[in-house]
Length: 350
Ligand code: MN
Image (tube, rainbow, N blue to C red; front, side):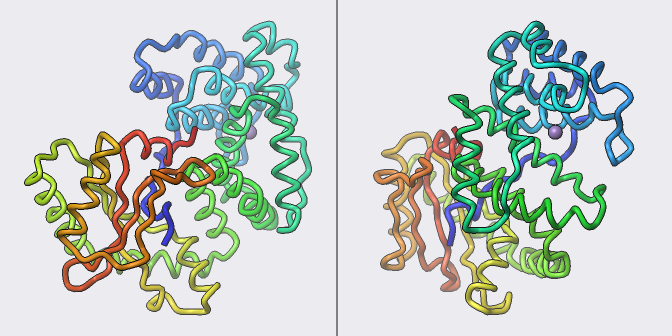
């Protein structure tokens, strides 16, 4: 059971145009000064002119997609501009002084931090992990946004890893799993962590990955009815108690965590017997406890499975109530209850 088992995925559709990026930003930040983004895009496009990605696309498609991921995480304009500019100093004739002159100190510092991180050599062995992460944290200096841009950069490179030569794929996937996934986890950004883990898994153990994906898909089909029934039972119970505007979600499977369970316990997929998880999002902390009480009166809780991460947040600031109950048809189900704000932090980080 993991608190991340029901995390949402980010939109995987790559951005194609500057206009799409601007629309995405304006959707959560209506007053955004889009001129900065346009300027960063044009600067980056000009500098990368003539360069192409292994996919055959113009190079700008990469920084544009990185900026899109940062916009999916609803980050600020400086971070998104940095996403657009992040490879200009390393890969083009632009210097950090050019970036400073055009975009000011803050963005120049961010681009400089990302450039330094990209040049860093990591040792990919588990016992060096702590050292690697310490190095990265030093490199990002005071600004955590450097790491967020770097994580978005890695995510887009992982999403397009199939264009890389076969021999490089495994090495990059291994590095992602050992360095970037723990980093995303430490930052509390579960959506990034989960996608990076599943992508790494796909390239490190492709046979296993596709087999498992197939099985999970089959199982999900079987479970669809059950999930919908439980959702409507929860909803009915909550609206009887006067709740409006609650959000209830069923789970989405995280392949890497299933694989790890199978390996650690040497069991088959059929034995993993992962509990189904549901998530209830409400407005206030007191409502969280109220919902907990309602769930425990609806279904019998399993002793020892209740965790209060609201009163005692996890080290990465994760907050939620978790309980496992005996649901319909005597199935164990996990219920996670948190406020919408806690949910946003859990998905997208600080
Ligand atoms: Mn890059």
